[in-house]
Length: 89
Image (cartoon, rainbow, N blue to C red; front, side):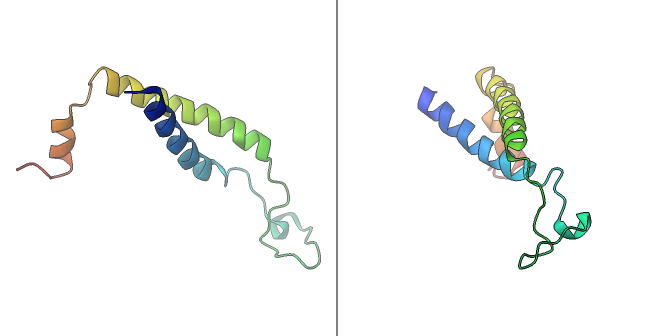
């Protein structure tokens, strides 16, 4: 596998993990009781985006390393994946 392919896979994993991490610790204005006039009550009060980007990078790196180990060591053969997906002839 080329370095560009590995970086592309990491990039995809990072974005998927980001969307999973974004809801962590979000409190709406309605929940905190501080609704700013002219805004939606469901809007977040504090996003902690730097913290979420940090955790996204940590989790995505762990997922990528696990995937890479499985891929390089052929721990799950392609024939087995095809069987799991029900695509075997």
